[in-house]
Each structure stands twice: as C-alpha cells, then as structure tokens.
Image (cartoon, rainbow, N blue to C red; front, top):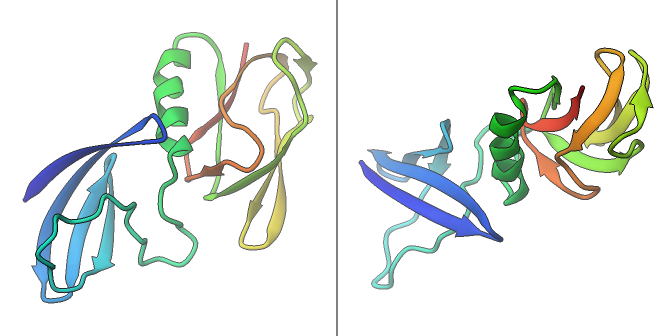
Length: 148
C-alpha cells in the first residue's frame, strides 16, 4: 500500500492506494474507499487526479469537500451541524451567517441525481457558519451549515 498527500485548490487529500487485481485498484481518499479502474503505468510519474467512484451517485471528491470536513471539526463544539444527506452540488444558499431560522426553514438547495433537494433547519437557531458555496460539490455527511 502506498500513501500520498495531495493539495488541490488549497484542500488537502490523504490517499492510500492498494493494488487489488489487474486493472482494478482500491483507493482510500480521506477515509472513503473507492474501487477504480487503472491502466498500465507509464514511464512518467502518476497524475494527482481525484479517483473515479465506481458507484454511480458518488462523484469524484472535489477540493471543497475536505474543506467542509475540516470546518466540521472546528464547529463540533458549538452548535447543530447540518450535514449533506447525499452527494450532490450546492445550487443556492438561502441564508446568511447571523440569520435566525426556525426548524423546517429551507437553508439551501442541493442538486443530486438531477433532482433539487431542499435542505432544512433541523432545529431553531442562528446560522453560525456556512461551510459551502453555490456550485460546490459535496459528499454525503459533509458539513453544510452550523446552527447555534
């Protein structure tokens, strides 16, 4: 097993690559395992590309996803964390930091599998932190918003 650390657009990825069989490789990126198809190695060093997920809904991790995970640790001590229920792309953020929200208010819209999903407040509170931006791709359980 080989381990790598990548920095893409300022976000760090910790990767482990393990050969499974000819043409297939297990790649672990920030704790999530992907099985990817591989080609025969070329003379040049391997490219630092994000892995392709074998499962259809899970897209390759983008630079923003680890940033959301990093903010998750910082926010853990101070509020209700609203996390992504599924992988997708943030379409609109409908709240701003400091805004008061009620349980059930729509905080943002997430597109996944060509469907728009309203992500709602899980509790009454004030928006303490917005960890995503419109256009950002997120994975399941990535931090979206912190309510206090």
